[in-house]
Image (cartoon, rainbow, N blue to C red; front, side):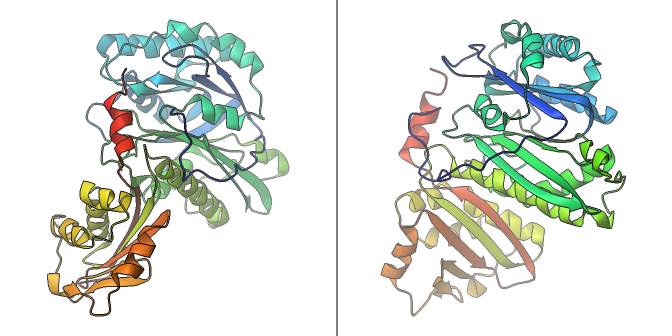
Length: 413
């Protein structure tokens, strides 16, 4: 955690309501950081339905492997998360660390190891000494409380400069339900999941298969549409849990994701996912600007997203934003290298409301001064129209500053 908070941080944090059916506790195990919490335990007093989306990295961490193996069971009683060590690329030792953690958590909660979920974030390649926190899980299970979301978000931070929390409410069949979420992430962030951990919990009563469909659909335009530095982490984990407590209020259990009663819930869930993912981008390491890049007129939505990500991941585009330089030539470059169909003579580009290029050349009415004013803002909208089809996509990224290099130049020291 760096000393100063990102200039793009929220001006105030939402008040996170307790959510029935889940309790949390944190501890300081000294895994990497001194004088701060680095272990989080979430406890579900009754089995919660569970869904998950994980990194597509071909070098996943041991906890990702562990979660993937447990997910088909569809039931969760506890989640244990540590920061400071990713437990990735740690071989047999990594598997032993997850086994010890799972055994300790299952014993503490009184459940099967198949109902435990694990996540780790931090340095890759360093063996994780799980004995540092396995012994405190008994105590954490007893101390866990429902009114602890903000502290939970703090415990999972690495280079984050602020904790990320979000909450929404919705109705299912006239019964009010709540959705709370936390996330961490600031670097090694790119789609497929973006590098990060996020845990979202609802008191709704929704079956695991329906929950998984909701999550898999919701991740595309949110967590998988943001990038800080184009690097996909080994450890990305996004999990959604439904405690089912709203059944006590008469909410009928939802078995299918296409149930029309889920409309408001789906919208609220997607808002939480978007809110958390944008908070991650706004805490990009060293970030001073956020760019919202919208591509229209591509051959397909998939093509639009590839073009948008090509722009968002370009170091030249991101450094231009850092320097407040309306260098639209770099946008042209990034469109051209994306590998998707584009017609130079149909291309149009906007910074904010200022059209800087049209029909393959500089806009004749273009004002460098007006475009520069757009670049001075913290939030910079960039729009590119390809002029070929109906495909659209929006992605979010941040600028690339000297601070990013400084943070990642001495990350392990």
